[in-house]
Every structure is written in C-alpha cells, then in structure tokens.
Length: 295
Image 1 (cartoon, helix red, strand yellow):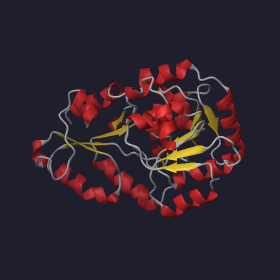
Image 2 (cartoon, one colour; image 1 turned 60 degrees about the vertical axis):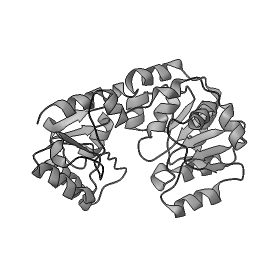
Image 3 (cartoon, one colour; image 1 turned 45 degrees about the horizontal axis):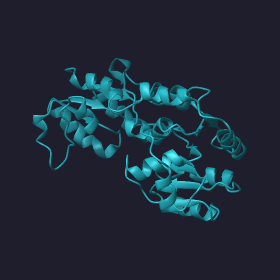
C-alpha cells in the first residue's frame, strides 16, 4: 500500500477499518484461494473493477480443484496482473488465460538495500564471522533441507533468517543441520539488522522449487554473490552470467554453485540491472496504469 500511495494512488487495505466497498473504484485481489471467492463475487456484484494478481507458481501438475478455482477467478477478473512473463507462462500452461485481460508488472525491492551499511551489526549481534545467508519462510517448497544436505560439510555456516509454516519440516531442517548452522527468527523487512545481514554475507542462497522471493532482489541491490535455482524465472530476471544458477535437486550442483559464488567477484551489472528495473516504487508504475484505467 505504501508504494502505491507514493505513486499517487489512494489505497486502503480492505478490512474492518476500510470504507464500505461502494466507496472504492477498483479492488486489487492477491490470490486465487477459494476462500476469497465470496469476496470477489461481492466486488463484481457492486460493479467494481477487479484487478487480480494470482501470485501462482505450479512446480508440479495442479489438482483439478486448483485449476477450477484459478479459472473461476480469471473469469471474474477485469484484468489479471502477472509479475513476470515466466509466471504467466507457468500458469497459462495449466489454465488458459484470456490474453486480452493480461498485464505485466515487475515486482522489486526497496532502495534502502543499496545503502552501504556495515555487516558488523549483524555479525556482532549473532556471534558470526563469515556466513552464507538464506532469507524467507522455512517450508518444503523453499527447499532449505536440500541446501542443508549439500552444505553440511562447509566450514562456513549457513544462516537461515525466517519463520516457518510447517513445524515438522522446520524440525527436520534443524535436525539435519550441523551445529555451526544457525536458525534465526523473523527480522523486520527493511530493518537495519536485516540489511546488515544481507550486506555482510559471503553469499546469498535460495535454491527453492519456485521463483525466488523479494530477498533475491535485495541481495542483488546489496551487491553480494547469489546462488539461485536455475529456471525460467531466474533467467528472465538475472540472465545467464550475473548469478550462479544450480539444480535445486542436486547436492553436487548446489555445492559447485556455492563454491563458484565464493570465488567469483560480483559483477556491478547485477546491482545496476535490478536498480533500473526492479526498484520500488517505480517498478509498480505499470500496475498504477492498470488500476487507473476504467473497465
């Protein structure tokens, strides 16, 4: 909401403190989860423009129920906004999307991650020296367990920053990790301690089974080496040369990617590319144009 307001959009988070639905021109809905369908139908019954951001990525064949739910949301939406072409292609391969409704809007990171903050704050707070960093929710689709198995013999500890949804998966990660690996709680977005953690790491690691999160853009802005899962999303956003791409299902591939990251200088082009294309709030300007066009 803050980023949209910076671009001149009067935006509220819909909920108990919001105005009645009839006071708004457009509703931006962020998912295709079935529990949201009643609200979406209410939006359409009020004659309001519905802009849908499905936030979908299927790493395996979705169930018929998932496909039916997505199709129902797509049919009701006036516009469907995808954050990347690779996201659109992933969804469209399973549920055909009416291309006359499709718009693209890049997502990105805050410029505060470009600031030359010291990594010492994080190192001193958590008693670490050299470390690898993984940021985000600990869950099976993020594939942290594979990173642990691949790097358990590394002398450089892997530090995880983030909460968990699946306690069983989290406990499996903790059990598999060697004693020098660390699991730290949630750190506030854009906080000084989080920015220090990113800036001070030897390499940023995200070997998920879905596209990397916003933290990958933050790491790029902070000019740190990056190890990401290979695939169309990584290719679209970072190209072939600027990050170290690995097979997230291969222990050997992850090991080699981290080794390369630790021994290869970061290209300044990585930070420049993300600054030019994926910086908030500027990267949301295409979304603002979609919100302002009358249905």
